[in-house]
Length: 339
Image (cartoon, rainbow, N blue to C red; front, side):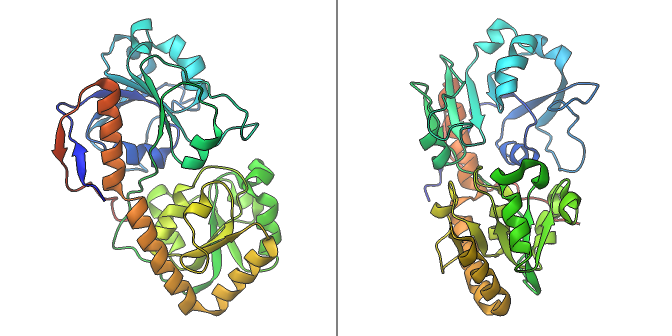
């Protein structure tokens, strides 16, 4: 891995939104100053950051009423609502003209290949989190690039796998339905032992929400990680499971087939019966799960490590704001230990 990076000549002042807590935590490991809008009524997208995640000293809440009076170097949008609806109301014209980045967290909907992306900006870059997403969105002539996930993790936590069952981590699975594989999860659970964690998972007989920094420890005893998802982006919980040393089994959809090598670090397929057969095999053969899990960990450490993620973000922020200073960077703040 190329360890050269673009250490900032100065800390940029960046306005962004709290859309995905775990992603924002990873993003704020980049050594710049981040300002997060909040509203007193705590409405969706503007709730206080809270204490479930150990936010760094470079993360600042800002009242929406104060945004227009602040000086920023860059605006980072993370949703269509923030870009199209909120920004015209909250930002001045000069602020909206600042160098801007739109982080697209998902593949296109409703049409996989014929959906134009809403982000158009003369001084902007569209950042996708997977190559699959970038391949399918129609970005027109808007400059775009991919920055794959980086996931902070506690290296002292490791997969133990003593529980002869699989674990799935999806928020609101019942409400999100077939796209997220609610039907596949229920069918698979009738064939093999599976548990579900995440917000509203109790609605499907799951174990409920697990605090962000406790997810890895909650997953570690399970034999494998199961993903029934048909169409979404690459999940952070799945990567976190791999970093633990846990094999992944599930639906071969979107970016996942580029991550999982069948028979090496897990198994993905479009035949649900073959997927269940492999889950049964891992339940019966814990040593096989251990071998695949070790390879999964090596895959995730090489591809989704925080040093690469931070370096990628330093580079794109330097490029969009035209403030770059080549430097060698070493060390990134790890996630705090759970519990």
